[in-house]
View 1: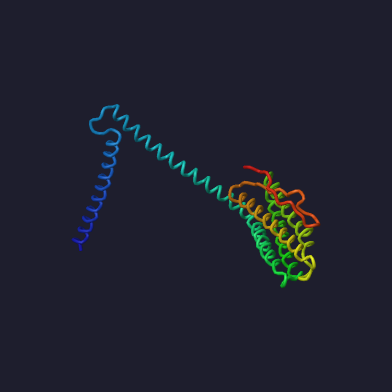
View 2 (view 1 turned 30 degrees about the vertical axis):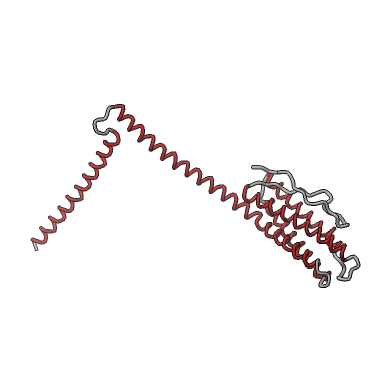
Length: 248
């Protein structure tokens, strides 16, 4: 038993000696590395100063590079956060407008088939467009409440543009819907209605581009409501594009 105790004490002492020896070796390595970097063997004072300056410049470059990367990452994160905020505001509006755009295409195709035409079916298309445009306008109203300054005005302009599209449907498109598939003015009315649907589809495209520009680039360019865009006879002059109303 005493032999085991003595052996354990000796083993512990040896291990402790080895640990301290490794620490000393490591410290000596760091010391001589430091001397090699800052002093070097047999160098003049100018050479030593040059070595120190180069090492100091390298340290500064690494620090500047790290700071630049942190700044760049912070700016990118901020821009992404702002884009996400704008997307939450207007992505639902874009979805409603896309549905209207698809409905104009489907309704236009529907108006090329006189034999299967029914006024009730045509009204279903109209109801779908009106419903989505109303939803878009309500969502823009909420977005306007969460916006300030020029961006608030931009939301108002988009809302007015959507309302003008609703007026085209109410005052022009519905007036030109044939009563039935034997309407004596079928060709004229269907042709006028399809022209109006083409115009509405174009308006949807302008609206979608304005929303995308705002989301992706914080560029608020509201489309302009063209003069004479609505009228009871179904005539129209086109959509037009407005000047920038906000530039960050």
